[in-house]
Image (cartoon, rainbow, N blue to C red; front, side, top):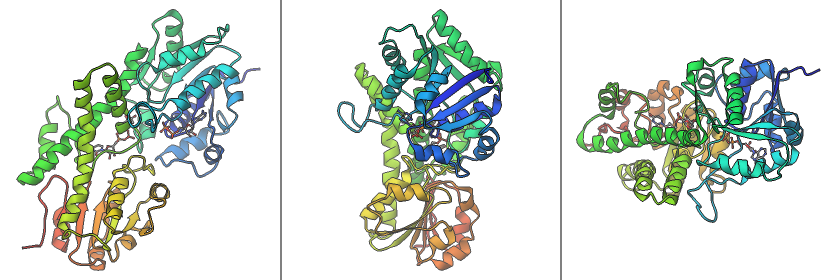
Length: 460
Ligand code: UDX
Ligand code: ADP
């Protein structure tokens, strides 16, 4: 007797696959959800009390569903055979070799998965693209899946994931929208409706939107490009603010109150990181160049150029402000994750800043509540003069400067009087996130360098 209404499989137990499937299992006890991965250590962690990713609220959901209708396994073949619907969320990093190196998406894991599905499947299935992919990937997937001419039918859908790390559980529970793209054929629409039914278990129908498959694939890239563009726009203005004594927080507030513009995603910063923004824009740029759309490609590429510039100028500002030498100076880095509430450091601006400071022969102390394990991996081989100390008070002791890289809430309420006393004078603080009270820190004695605001220094 079949106990579950549907068997759902997810290939790839990462930041996207893990939380998304955990939410489907939690919200839909009538479905069996299995997540498989080629990495046995990752699967062991998903089956333990120490999940491989830190995401607020995720532990509770996984604990509630695991063993009942949520399973983690390395048996990919069995998973494929038993499934009705397969979500694919394997990694698609930027290519590091050959044609399109540094720009195009590396689709090798994706293609291997398609071939494995074809080899193992014994019945028809719906295949859902969950990872972010270049537009038209579904066509390649279909071509591979139909290459055997068997009776088994595969319907490929695009269902891009819009969750953001750190808020993934809430984003999955209350999404702004769920997008399902399909072929507009009879069987494509039937497959699309089956996927819509799954989400309709908890997402209001009017937030589940459908489109043709190419629009769906492209929408994900464009959504990320627009979000990143807002950050680069505000960061570009932050430099101008520093030159003109304007305050970026006031400018962003005034601009954001225009309901056509909106107030979100206007925080000036050290720059965006994360596994998606840069990769997706590079992808978009690569596709545009492929079609000969050079002006469009250059336009989007400038979003990345501003992001790189923001990080470069941060280090340069530290160097020039601290009397043009950082050699043997102790610099404390507050935060290594690419944003708060995650341990993820992929493309984190902190990596660039740390590497540049190491080149300048500074001594680094890195502090972060969740990302030290990843920070050690990122700086492996070059961290002779780096120490890792979780407690920010201890980390800052004896340092010449503090550089804030991540907007962790805990950095807002530290005992800065105590920290100041323990530092070498003159003491500097460079706030790459504008999260501390700059005036208060200045009054304590710090020389304060916010982002996009006039600096507050005690120098004559
Ligand atoms: C992003 C998209 O938001 C999400 O929809 C998509 O599915 C994946 O990519 P994520 O990278 O997890 O999510 O985090 P996000 O909150 O978008 O932040 C990205 C980066 O931008 C972070 O480094 C963050 O600190 C930075 N940021 C964000 C700013 O510098 N300023 C802002 O105002 C907002
Ligand atoms: P994302 O942020 O897109 O979720 P991750 O790197 O966190 O990316 O996760 C992708 C996961 O996919 C990794 O755990 C990786 O081991 C897994 N993976 C890659 N290729 C395959 C494959 N062929 N079969 C199963 N899992 C795979």
